[in-house]
Length: 203
Ligand code: ADP
Ligand code: 5GP
Image (tube, rainbow, N blue to C red):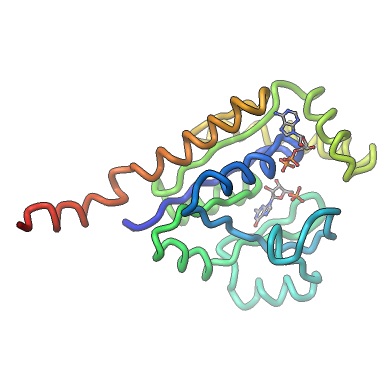
């Protein structure tokens, strides 16, 4: 694998993954955000084909049977999956492919791409802050928020398996950090060395 780059972000729901993804889409022109397929219902402000491909459970399971997913998982009682074909295409076009997946998705994508894929675990300084972010987002009821907080602590147990850890406290600093990590991937040696060596000695 010598073209493109892969960045995986994971972290508890409400930690700021979508907010930081927006920033990356703004500052990195060559970024391709892997649009997952999901059976969860659309939130206010979300668009089909932009944030997710929203499908029925039946349609999702058909795609599983057809082997269309690089990985898929059940998260918070909904199915989520990553299609392989658009990612391969984006890498061929030398894009930086960004995945926003849960910790199981991270493990599977790492297994597929190896060290070529770099990953960031994003979280908050503590549970209280996560709770207040989930409340401020106004997309979940109190019961769902309590459930997400339990899930969050379980996900935190996997943070040592990631290449980078980003505590999203001050938003300006977090934006700078995620941008620095993403940009650093564009300079990885494995990305360009073959082409450089082939062309370097030509007069
Ligand atoms: P995720 O995509 O990980 O579920 P979001 O990006 O939707 O999380 O963020 C959850 C909420 O927290 C949103 O209302 C967002 O505006 C807010 N938020 C994100 N980062 C920060 C931050 N550093 N400080 C304060 N609020 C934040
Ligand atoms: P949300 O419903 O809040 O957008 O996402 C819930 C969780 O599902 C998050 O942890 C998110 O990273 C994860 N997720 C989103 N898409 C995928 C995917 O394609 N595969 C996996 N494994 N997890 C996903």
